[in-house]
Image 1 (tube, rainbow, N blue to C red):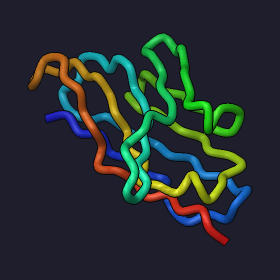
Image 2 (cartoon, one colour; image 1 turned 180 degrees about the vertical axis):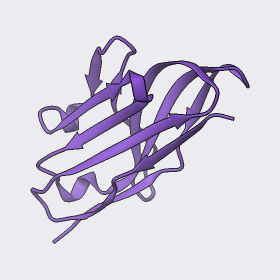
Image 3 (cartoon, rainbow, N blue to C red; image 1 turned 90 degrees about the horizontal axis):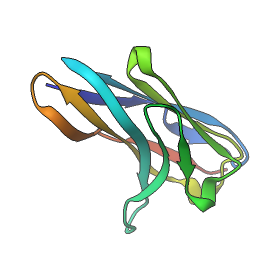
Image 4 (tube, rainbow, N blue to C red; image 1 turned 60 degrees about the vertical axis):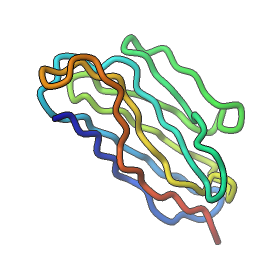
Length: 120
């Protein structure tokens, strides 16, 4: 079975930085698009940033210039470097990926989420 496992969340002061990681594991042939989403309390889940398998990226307007998404295809891992963090960035951050695996063909997967809290 394919799993996405996030790490790197935590508590940070406004203006600080965090780096999230998400590694896909299992009987994987290929990982296609990968992305980060977030959900704040009582809010809908929203796309933060996405990256294609060939490195093209897109960002939500609210994080442009502050967040950077990248990936390591050899490790089936996607990263989110978050700088100049604001209290409004507080949310649970979820990793998402389209994965081609021996167990499930091409399927979309979600990670379990990692909490990011920006507070003084």
